[in-house]
Length: 433
Image (cartoon, rainbow, N blue to C red; front, side, top):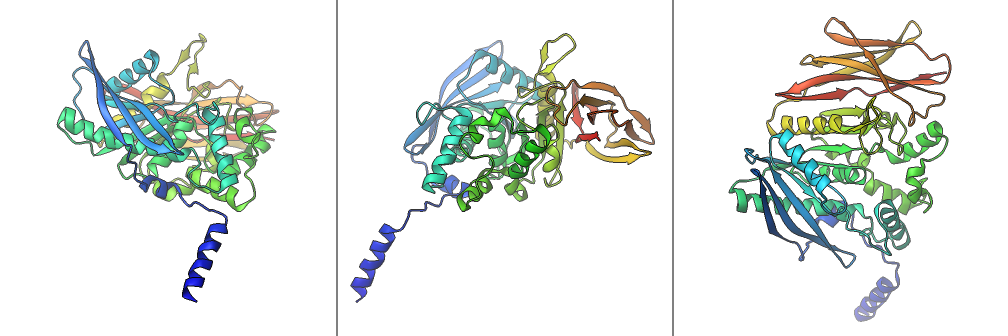
């Protein structure tokens, strides 16, 4: 009887649909026998040093992920116990290498950049959002939780931190105790999830991924933009937006939406967003800002899109607002020098909108950024600045309701750390009839 029962249970287990459980934490715990790194090249030029590291992070769906990991050490800069780690797609090109070296100069500490997030093209030549969407669909079809591409993207950063700690011991004879992780767009998405997954992450600076609390964000896009953004068509065309109302669909977004990990995201956070980013509603941050715990700051870049390049009056693109903000944040974290403490309040007075900001220490100066649009879609609006009033240690502005259409506004304050100027922002408000 026992033998028959054992055989029966074995057959039933074989016939039962296969549900492969491997949420993010479990996926990161899985051993990776192929993990390896080696210092392939050390480039010295005018006192600056660039280290090229070859990294194999993992094997995912029988595909071995290989990366270039670069470390930038400017002339006269000593290693610090905390390292800024940026993640990027593709492979190194001169423009990006120059950017990372300049970033390390402004941070005044070595910085690193991990490429190949994600490894691509894959799965029939797909890249970027189309590749992520393909892996989401494959999860929904198979229920194999190893499929969502964000999992190996996060694991690549985890393995890069392993490699960088070993590199620091070998090359610099010192220890790396922690990391500041940053990245833009889907690499910003990866930044959030890495921060929620590894205790070595001391701070994060996700850029242009203004879509936490994703289900509500998609509803908000319909309400404010009139349709889903064309920029997320890879997800809408595959039936991933709106979120499928199935158990698997609900579980997918809980596995990949950083908002569900916010109890683990207690580290300092600097969010860097472009006010004219075509991917998101202009006030998307308001759907998740209050839900974020721990120290947090936001930097809006006016008249800048998904690339964070601000368009000046001369029409030339300028990345300095984002770079200075990121570098200053990294300096504060590396030196355990507290960031400024900002508090603000949006309210109404005498039928007008009012914004009051307090800062400790006091900001050097500040301004109000204001834009107007016929609808609640400000992605093509022009942002203009005006002065803030100083009163009793606070900075304030009053905004008249627009005669027609809508207005959006926020405050920006100016600071310096040593010789490096940077800005911090308040959340923005949209007003109109």
